[in-house]
Image (tube, rainbow, N blue to C red; front, side):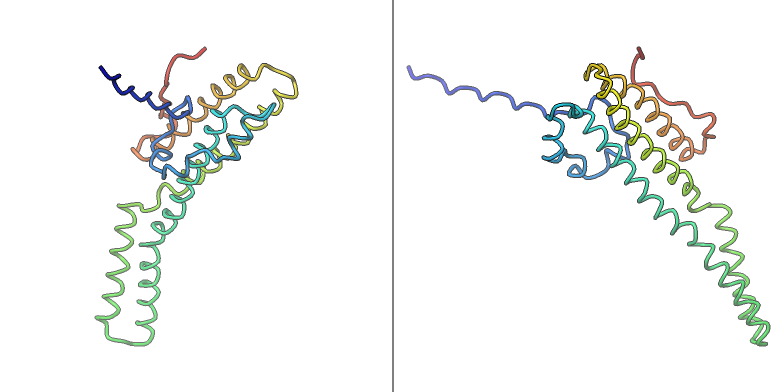
Length: 202
C-alpha cells in the first residue's frame, strides 16, 4: 500500500504588533503598514529595536498620515461654504453700487445667507484643529519612543524589558489620542472622553 501524501505544514502567521492599530491605521493600504526589508534588517542588528517596535512606529506613521490627509480635506470643507458666502456678499454690494437690477442683488444676498446658514448648521471642517493636534501628538509619540529606546540601550537596560515598558507607556498615549479623536467625532467633549483600556496594566 502506497504512502499517503504528506499534509503540508500550516503557514507561519506573520509577525504582528502586540498592540492593535486604530481604525484610521487599519483602513490604510496594507502595503503601507508592511515592514520594509531594510527595517527588518535594522531590527535584527545588535542594539536595534525589536521588530514589534518597528511595526508599532510604522502604525503610528500610517495613523499620522491618515490624519494629515484629513487635515487637507477639512481645509477644503472649511471654506466650501465660507468662500461662496464671502463672494456673494461682496458681489451684492458691488451690484448695488453699479445700480444693477435689484433682483440680481437680492439673489446674491440670498445665496450668501443660505451659505452662512448651512455653514453654521453643518460646521464643515470642524475637526481641522483636532486632526492637526493628532498629527502633532503622533509625531511627538514616535520621537519619544525612539529616544527612550536609545537612552535605554545606552544605559544597558534589558532590551525586552525596555521594549515592554516603552510600548506600555506609548499605549497609554495612543489611547488618549484615540479618545479625543473619537470624542470630537461623536460630539463628546474631549475632557469627558475616556481612553478604552485594552487589558490589565502592570
